[in-house]
Amino acid sequence: MSRLGKMPSLQRAFVICGMMACSITGLMYLLGHEFQIQRSTLGTHSILAAHGIAAILATLALGSVMPFHIKAGYKSRKQLWSGFSQLGFLATLLISGALLYYGPEEMRDGAIETHWIVGVLFFTIFILHAFTKLRKTSP
Picture (tube, one colour):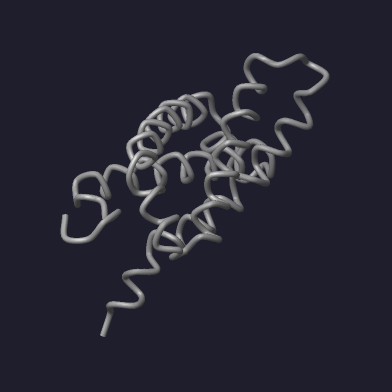
């Protein structure tokens, strides 16, 4: 690791793949279940199960960056807005996801809406945050 806070390439790949897999499966289920786009393919239990498994991997990926990457990013004052907004979005996604399964029935509709709106916002910010370096270093 040449720079403080820079993730090793294997860890960076794990984080990007975990977050992308979770986001993409979530978007697939959102399109199929909520927006009725190819519901028979995208809105299935298999896609929802894949999203749940990907969410576990994404949570592990988040845990892997918390001790060093976040601390170093805070100290360097680089990408603070996108980094900390992602943390807030991920906390909201974890809580709303837990409420979908373990929360009271009265909260389910609000948890669904919160989860997919915040999920779309997170995915957008994650793409910007993860690939900002590539944009700056590309010729």
